[in-house]
Length: 210
Image 1 (tube, rainbow, N blue to C red):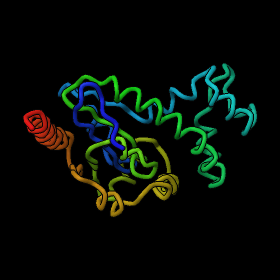
Image 2: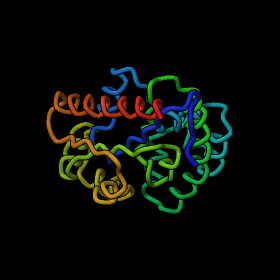
Image 3: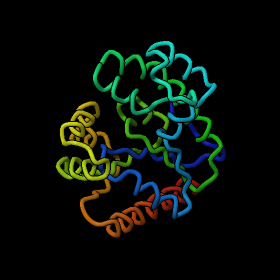
Image 4: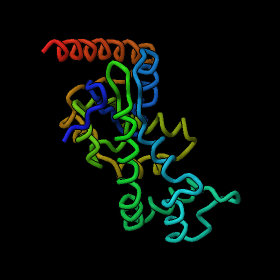
């Protein structure tokens, strides 16, 4: 069932693989006055100090998964779950319902012309059910690897391991309603985001006239 904000408006699910340019695209949508609800931000909110999810994680993985100040050691947790599929499934089972609750709350309170739910796992986790359309920020997989390797100062193997845990490019393309190809400079991406923004505004106007 589609979640509608108040007042009703268009909800766009924005996704893409690692290194595709999701963050840059959402930044440009924000520049155009559109509210972006970021699933990664919501994922940090639900494991803040004092939250029940953080207590559950510490019980499951041990206190070594926490930093000296009691907050989550995200790097250590990432290493654990990417090295063990069973542990990743356990963590997803704990966090995904909580993240979804936070997302729904933010979507309901959104007041911009339309809203964007930005999530790298939009399709994998079924979060697209909260949206009206899926927008894919697309890039060739070789470019994804190169961007991420340079950005994070990490190895190609580390990047491909993360990519293997996500849907591949063809799977995303098959499910997307709209696609922005990000294979060039930031100026090109901004122009393509602007064109999509104008298209979504036109859809909102058409919906209001029905």
